Image (cartoon, rainbow, N blue to C red; front, side):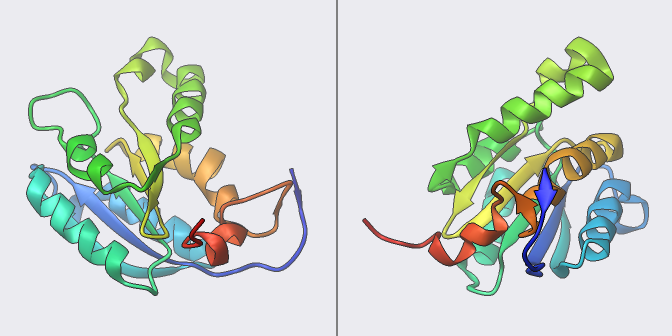
Length: 174
C-alpha cells in the first residue's frame, strides 16, 4: 500500500468488555488507547464495562449518537463463553456490516494462533456514520487487528483506499 495525501485525525472511543479486568489492569484498552493516539488520533472517551449486552448497547449507542465521534474500538466479549455478548449487543446497532474485517482478521490470526482463530467472533461495521470495530479481549489480538488492519484503514494516506476518507460521505442518503 502506498501512502499519500494528508493525515486526518479522527476522534475514537475505546471500550473494554470484561467481567474480570479493572482500569488498573486493562492491558488491551491501554494498548488501543495508546496506539490510536500514537497514530495521531484523539481518544474521545474510554470505558470498561462487564459483559452485559444492554449496558454495552446503551454506551455504544450514546457514543455513535455523538456527531464528533468517528469510531469506536471495542475489546472483549467476542468469544464463545456464556458471558461473551459483544456481537449480540452491538450487531443490532450496525447500519452496515463490514464482513471483510472479520474474515481478514481471522485469516491473519490463523498465521499467529492456528485453528484457535475460528473461535473469534470479531466483527466491524458502520453505525450512524461511525466505524465500530469489535476485537477479542487479548492484547495480542488487539495488536494484530490494529497494526495489520485498523491503523491503515483509519489513515487517510493509505492507498488505494481507506475508511478515513469516506467519513464525509457516510451519512449520504440514496
